[in-house]
Image (tube, rainbow, N blue to C red; front, side, top):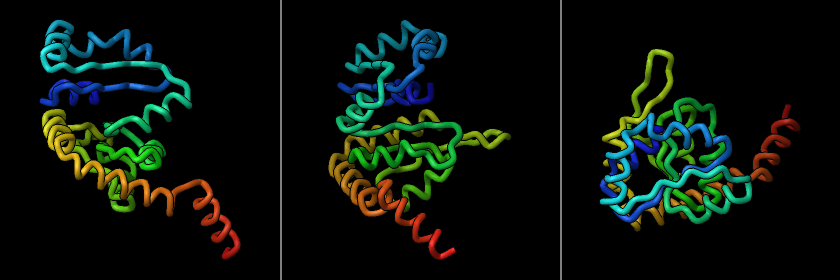
Length: 177
């Protein structure tokens, strides 16, 4: 929902928001309960934007990651979101809410930025929609920054965060203990 709202408020033209994964049929059914259908569709048409919602298997989701220019991840709760590391592995820079250890992952990889985030009383994170849309607009206009972020993220993933590297670290720790 937040990704769609950020995309809606973005001034970007000729863009596509692809919501991929499994179990998205509920979102598809409730799309126009979330956003006013006439306003939303008119806006998308005038800005030449598209929203695609698809239930994809793992292989197609990975392929989509590889083709994406940017990964928008306004999650409300996480621990350490593996999907951010997958983004780095795919050379796809990311924007994510401040949940879990997203800030730490950004420090390690330099592949993403934290969306302006608010928190509720329970600690759930929520993107500030308008400020996030501005951040999205600014970043997608900066092709050089996107390339730098994608290269740094991939390099960090390759050197520290592949399953092989993680397994080596666990084995090393196990031997030390």
